[in-house]
Amino acid sequence: MIAIGLMSGTSLDGVDAALVEIKNEHFELLKYVTLDYDESFKTRLMRNLSDETAKLSEICSLNFELGGKFTQAIDLLLQGSGLSYSDIAFVASHGQTIWHNPKPNRGLAASTLQIGEPSVITAKTGITVVSDFRTMDVAVGGEGAPLVPMSEFMLFKSDSENIILQNLGGIGNLTYLPKQANIDDVVAFDNGPGNVMIDYFTKKYFHQPYDEGGRIAMSGKVIPAIFAELIKDEFITRKPPKSTGRELYNQKFMEELAEKLHFSDYAKNDVITTVSEFTVYAMVTNYRLFTPKFDRIVLSGGGSHNDYIRKRLQENVNKPVLTQEDLGLSSDAKEAVAFAILGYLTLNHRPGNVIGATGAKRPAVLGKITPGKEKS
Image 1 (cartoon, one colour):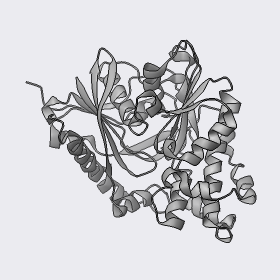
Image 2 (cartoon, one colour):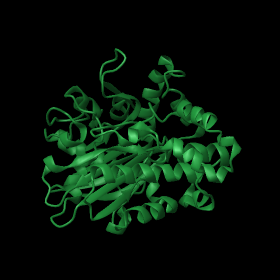
Image 3 (cartoon, helix red, strand yellow):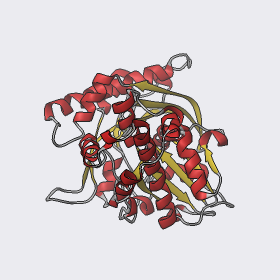
């Protein structure tokens, strides 16, 4: 069968779409594309990730608009493939996280909210959509994240090596696969900011969406006074299971940080170097605290293309640091492929969460199903 996985992450770059062929539980990436969001749309998304600026009416509209964006991503993916909607067994869509509160606090229930209405996708394409994967895990006591570890266990488990799979999207998250692991041995959690701070300040100071190749960071130096404050972040050393996102590392947080630490007093490239070094620190600190025995690190996500991060990570761990491309896979497509795998598990009534990663009380079948047209 052929499936499509869709992912819109904390970086708010756009929709990642992966065309995946599934045979005997072997998952092969056939094609990958990204549908970029325009700046106006990103701005509207961004302001609805904060309590201070969110509007119910706009969130309601964005839910349906994102469904349309996801459909456009499907159309872009199918262009030139020789495939039509009727050839696709299902679409698995993570959606866009608007708010994530996995632990009760301030009188609020444990909860999570993703938008990107699946009915819009099915109405246009007739394809069955599996969506909203986080909610069931939260409902059974989990963090609702990270959800990629099940796919990583299926794709990367090894009899001979202890492997860290480090994803660097907006948020950094890792999966630790001990050699000869079974599913109960898998450890996974968010380890802090990935690209979210780097991208924000690169756009603010250099009017670029991200630090391509880490070139800006490579040109500067770490500012000790700022770095010393950044590493006080309590999330970094919090014990797993743990997850985070824009509800913590949002625009308000970063603007207040810049004001408090007087970013404007320093060379702008030094600021980028410093927040990039903080991303490296977050990863390395979590390895040392929670996954001390490992033989290699495999990077994925947009941050895997940042030469500063790769160089500094290599210097800190003194172990091989590879990318998915080094293994013949795609760093950028990783999460979209992961959701195609999770959608497959859902439709086969099989659990998709890893309780050692999310802290859920039990394994659970994830997602909600929006049925498509019956296949002839």
